[in-house]
Length: 636
Image 1 (cartoon, rainbow, N blue to C red):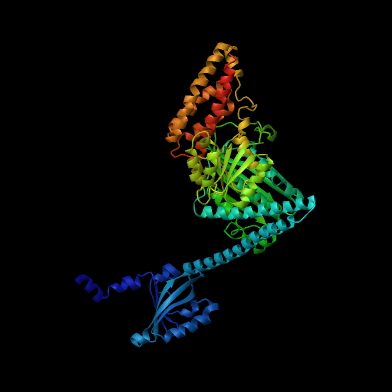
Image 2: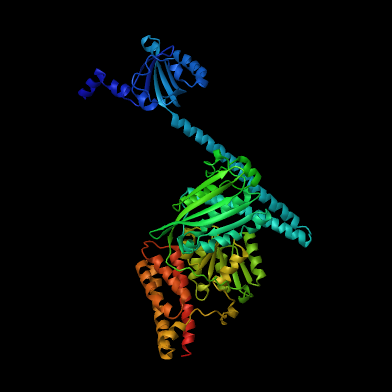
């Protein structure tokens, strides 16, 4: 304590506080002449020690603000103490920095005509303030734009719906319905943009890791823009390197989303000329394929000074762009963030009135499954019986209920309605249904609780297929649906095609009266290989079929139990053991599925939705094949 008192009395703290302190200290007379400054001027302003002594403070002030500074300086001379006077000071590198001083008037303290100026660098604070103001203005502009963009289709839908209520001829009705559909699609795109940005900003956006092939993905995507391009007389074409004809592991939905944004922008901002999409492989290194996709147009282009801001939230190349072309102004922001979250990058090159090229670089792991050159079979709607299928539609929203029921009625389904989960359970006590369409968020009892209660009901009611209808189709929400006991999910808004595919192609729902009659299906096995290696020995073939029919169900049970216990090593091992049998019996599609499950389970440490669905679908498909092989066995 005594040593500290001596330190204070001696004034040794002066060097630590004044000479070596982080603040810049000036002593100036009332005319602005600099009599002293500490060493901090070197670190902040670039001047050597004592190099400013004898110079005039006013000579370093930004000329455009000098008069205002002199006025503040005079006011400072009249006060004992002055706080927070801002100014810009010329640095050694000839740039100006924002400083702020607090002043002690020596006339009041010592009777001397001078000031001690304690200066702090506030450049960062000023830059932050400017950036905050810019962001605030951009956000205000965005909110104005988005308000306009949302109100426009809503007003259109409301107005046209009023016109539809009057008697119209068929041509007018079709025109009005098309306008409603178009407005609805615009509204959906804008809302999805806002929700995606919120999910990205909150860190809740999840990416899948599933197999896909660019040679399948890109042609389908390009075809969706063919009509728009043709309307504007634009040439729209694409090229894909043959080296990219391989299975990639990643999130094709998110890649699709990025490319949709880039291609739709190209179509929107190009009035003459062409749009070309090119896919190339930059390199293949250690099982990782570095993919480069460019979208080149001959459109209006982007001003050079705007190229650095077009990827920022709430901004476009020009405010008039939104007014002229529409949109949320979020598309490129979302595209960049989606790419960067997949360890990629997106670049742009552009010239006004010449065109733009957006280039996406993303690395994808290469899958081991071979690419099938066959076109996947799409079941014909004619082959499926929809008449008299009994559906329980559990939905609390009147519009959604009307929409789903109208679709089901066109397929001659018998549909019952329940406004919440509790009513659904009461209906199930006295009625039986072929399938239940279950909304998730409902009053009284939600879809999760209702599903759990249904699964506890006596058979066969408790085993009725349940499809979740949810607007929240994130990975977590889907897993929650499956955990509750639902068979699958359909995200809102869904199309009639989506619902048809789910009910009659994926779940293969048939009316109870038709359940006894098994529809004709294509054989999923081919015994040609077995006949060839055995010389068509019937006893050998019979023995192989018996072995498969008797042993595989146990393997499937093992795999399902391992999935419940999160024993991924066992899942991978069982899938590996099943593969050779699949090869012998020519069950090629399921052999590929077994390989996929083996790769998914290998090295994983946490359960994934993709693995769960893959095992469930594989197990179900295997049991169907086993039944078919059991019938085949009778021939031997």
